[in-house]
Length: 204
Image 1 (cartoon, rainbow, N blue to C red):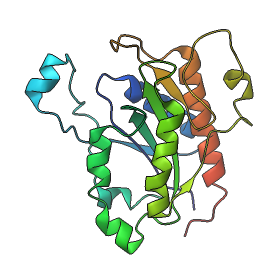
Image 2 (image 1 turned 90 degrees about the horizontal axis):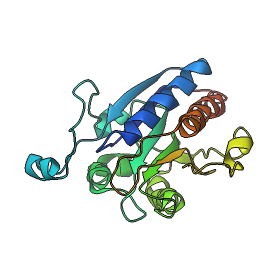
Image 3 (image 1 turned 90 degrees about the vertical axis):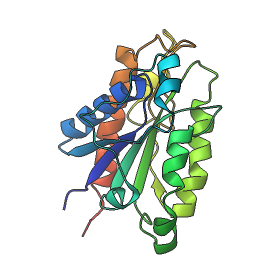
Image 4 (image 1 turned 120 degrees about the horizontal axis):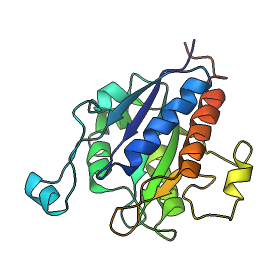
């Protein structure tokens, strides 16, 4: 049975949303399917307006802890805040007490893709910080690694996000930099390799 995969992200300005689309295209290129969800905003509209945030897309459904439990594997899109989950993601995880107690996410596969403002913004530290949450839930982390993306990860000819921990992008200090073709290509590669890895598992 093919794995049921969810791509879940939070995106304030659209950077992570674009990476999520590339991840999905990679899963589809590998012969799989994925459902895309977003995490609910926690900031009030007046604050978002002052930040010139466009608001969340009405075409992407919101995830709930119970809905996520229906999937075998997840790819999570995280825009970092000080090298960690943003509040919106933390608010989601704080609602997963039932799954923590019952093992609702136990043994499920998870990967990450991350957006930071700059090269030193915490792409690796955010992935590392997420390991604590994954461990408490008993989830199995699937990194991007180097095997399928060595040429891109070793390429120093242009500035790009992404690490062996997962695909990524740099948004710029003012949020004006959108994902590059190389960053989107890396995300597609992650989607393909993630699907190939989890599809080896016999899901009942």
